[in-house]
Structure formats: C-alpha cells, structure tokens
Length: 310
Ligand code: TXD
Image (tube, rainbow, N blue to C red; front, side, top):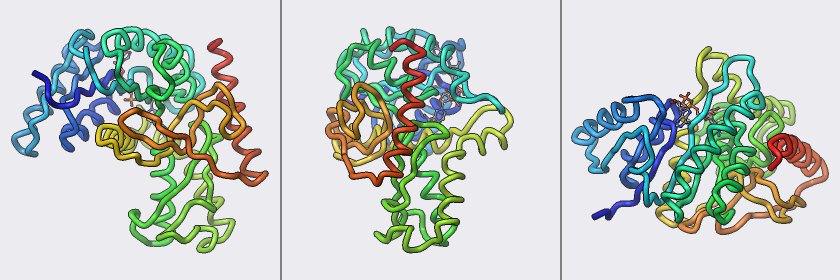
C-alpha cells in the first residue's frame, strides 16, 4: 500500500539525481528515477537508498529504464534532455529536447493522469508549453522551474555584495528563462528594504547582468555540463510547496491567460503554489521600462514556441 507521495524524476543525470537526493533527504515522498541509460537510474537509486540509514530517511527509491514503476505519481519532474555545452545557447537545444520531452510526456501522462508536471529541461519555457499541449493536462498542473533558480542566483549576489545573510534577501525575477530574463530590483529586498535604497544603480546593474548570465557563468567554469545543485534545490522547493500545500509564492513558468498582457503562453511570473499546482498568478504593476523588458522576454519565448508550432 502506498502511503507516501510518489515523485517521479525523469532524467537521472546531474539535476535529476540531485532532485532525488534532496527530495528523500527532506522525506517528501518515495522517488522513482527513470533514465534511458541502462542500469544508471537503478544504480543511483540503490546508492541513495543506502544513504537512508546514515541520513535517517525511509523514503523508497526505485530506478527504471521504463515507465510502469511511475504509475500513479503525484508529481513528475522532467529533466531528461541534453545539457548545454560551452558556446551552445539554450535555443540550440530546442528541437532535440522537444523530441525527448514530447516522448517522455506521452509515457508519464497516461500512467499518472492526476500528476503535477514540473519541467526543467531547456529551453525551459518552450518545453513547458510543449508538455502542457502534449499531456492535455489543465495548465495549473504543468509548471516550469526557472525563476526560483534565477532569483536564488540574484539573492546570492545581493547577499555577497552587502555582506548580509542570504536569508535576509528576497528577489524578484520575471520573464522567460534566458538572457532576456527580467530581474526587478525595486521588488528585491534586504530585510524588507528595496535594494534600490541600498546600492547604486551601477552596482545593481552589475548584479542583474551577472544573474541573467548566471547559467552561462557556471557552464564556462565546468567546461562540460551545466549547473545542477541550485537547479535541483529549486525544483525541490517547488515540490515541497505543492505537497505540503503551502500556498507559497514562487517565480515559476506558468500559463498566462491575459495576465501581464500575455495570452496563451508560458512565461516566468510569481505564482501561488499549492496542492492543486498553480493556484494563482500574482500580478504586479510594472513601470514602462520593466514592461518593455518583460515584453522583449515574452517575444523571445514566443519565437521558440512558434518554431515548435505549438
Ligand atoms: O533552470 C532550469 N530550468 C535549468 C535547466 C537548470 C539546470 C539545467 N537545465 C536543463 O535541464 C539542462 O539544460 C538540460 O536540458 C536539463 C538536464 O540537465 P542535467 O544537467 O541534469 O543534464 P544531464 O546530466 O545530461 O542529464 C540529462 C539526463 C541524462 O542522464 C540522459 O541520459 C537523460 O537525461 N535522457 C533521458 N531520460 C529519459 N528519457 C529520455 N528520452 C532521455 N534522453 C536523455
């Protein structure tokens, strides 16, 4: 009998394996890891299961190269795909990853018709739109992870700049996950104080630029592969908000149906996450400069979605 929530992670690579690790460490549920590489999800699951006695978790871990073990999942996280290599843009990945994600969604949606899907694979916003279309799920149950990561990066840089605890820093990031993302300094705060009162426009501009290029900075350092600890932690914050029905407001790629002047497209905005998935889109008033930057980011997302004919 299953009494713990069931969380499937498709793609047991760097992000997927770390998602599994953080999920069981927090005892959020049992985890099924799926990957196309034979033996790999099974091996990682067994290794993580054997960490349980040391770290004190009882979550069950299962690895598989097929999908039957995923049936009846509460949440399915999709990280399957190729990661960016140095010099490769997220957009280069579009067609290859669309093929992979489309096939994965077909497999999981039929076996877990009530699941909430969390997309991670890049280019993120287009992959979420694709997963929503392919699954036939209500848009509230198909969500993309990007904003939590982007704002965690912005928070890290703000905390370092001001030499304060990261816990004091909140940050606000809008738009697509890409170089055109829109960090919003006037809604980014340290103990409630907007950073626009604490830092010069030049310093803020530096932090904003570093945030927008945050993924590429790590890709260039690692040489092969891309960031995975913070991306995985970001996914797990969303999983926890959903399973514990926290109604937590987090920036996620969500389906806009007129909000922020956008209709019929997934883009990063603050949402309320609870057991039903995206329970509300939080709308704020943008200045004309912010709206222009947001519109530019939306246009970049729409271009990819159009290329996929979604
Ligand atoms: O903010 C964000 N959304 C992101 C996105 C942050 C970090 C990483 N981001 C993207 O996630 C990245 O650009 C990639 O598109 C994915 C996964 O990144 P990861 O770093 O985990 O890549 P890996 O280590 O290469 O893992 C991908 C795994 C690998 O083990 C493949 O064998 C597997 O995906 N894979 C598949 N699994 C199942 N089914 C199919 N078809 C499949 N194809 C590949």
